[in-house]
Amino acid sequence: MSAHRGPPGPAAHAAPAPRPVEVALLASVFVIAACGLVYELAAGALASYLLGDSVLQFSTIIGSYLFAMGIGSWLSRYLERQLPAHFLRIELLVALAGGALPALLFLANAYAPGAFRVLLYGLVLLVGVLVGLEIPLVMRILKRNVALKDLVSQVLTFDYLGALAVSIAFPLLLVPQLGLIRTGLLFGLMNAAVALWALWLFRHELRRLRSHAAACGLTLLALAAGFAGADHITTLAEDKFYQDRVVFTATSPYQRIVVTSGRQGHRLFLNGNLQFAERDEYRYHEALVHPAMAAHGAPKKVAVLGGGDGMAVREILKYPSVESVTLVELDPNMTQLFSQHETLARLNGHALASPKVKVVNTDAFRWLDEGTDTYDVIVVDFPDPTNFAIGKLYTSSFYALLDKRLAASGYAVIQTTSPLVARQSFWTVVATVESVGLRATPYHAHVPSFGEWGYVIASHRPWRLPQQLPEGLRFLNLQSLPQLFDFPQDMARVPAEVNRLSNQVLVTTYEREWGQVLPAH
Image (cartoon, rainbow, N blue to C red):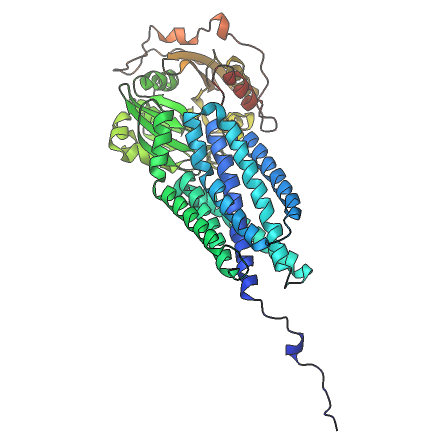
């Protein structure tokens, strides 16, 4: 008599537990996705630092990378046998090409600038093809034991999770703490670790196990040596790129900061662009600050937007009437550097340590929008509009907010690039200031490190020449001041379009004009 069979128990329908190989490969998908995105972001960040126009650089690099991944996925169809061996070799190639990408680009920018773009896109395409090969190979290896519907969902889930993790960590943790070169090498080590992991997982399937093990070991050793010597690589590149000795470097989420020292003093570079030179910065900052401050007569509340080096604040504090100065600087690395580094703090006269000065590390656009206080003088000292992130600070939307925060009798002054080299850009800023109902009074000064440089005073009332200036100025005096407001024929006003958030014409105009006089990579 046979026993009655009841309904199957829960265990009968339970899915089989994942095998260790499956778990390991899915974990490797997470790492692969993270590494691939890091290489893509590093290439985009470096191109933005060195070539400008972040939107263009990231767009073309992301597009090239995705195209290359598609090519890699298509090529994977031709890998039919020994899939674990192919996967291991590809991982090692990605580790070397992707891990070394930032270091190679830094060195190329310094030693072979003419080849920079070729190397940039060559590496992006190479890494993209290799990464495009990886995921199809993993899926085909897992297909042996995982149903197709589960396979696709699991692989893509881990792929997207890896990308999410890195997209958050890259700007907030990796670049500020490690810099681009070490970040690339760290993730190259992670790719090599995946290869080593694959070596162990498939040790019974791989031929020439010792050769594969030696390749893994050499790759890990090379990347580890690069990681340990990353500072030397950076120094090697920057000592060649900059004429003088590099005395300080830092990479923040916003920019690459470099300070050099030479026979003509210290110089500050942001993303490779000169911001001031010690030998003549007094010309730039006296011209920026005093025409507006002295015209007011007795300013009490002053705001500085940008200008984290503190030089403009130094000039503002020469007026006894000033009771408070609010310095709004996005990058805390800048204000810390110029308040804590003894030599650099000396350049600004330790202005940032004054009890009258309040430092606010935030976006100037947001600060204007969220506040209600008005100011007697507002000094706007942003870098030139080399990309759309900075370009928004030169738009009619920004100047409308500036208008609301300016006292009725106040003056704002804006640094406005060169009216000689970038004539159209200069008058675009003037037209944009006027478009929000402010009076615009343009002027210019000669700064040897920059050439002819321009500024615009924005106000509700007509600007008038001041009757006195602070004592001890090295450049400006009452006799020469009127000449700053006279424009020769080659800098005279030309028709210009208003720069709006919706079009950002200034960025493309600026890039075109400066591109005609600066050597391109």
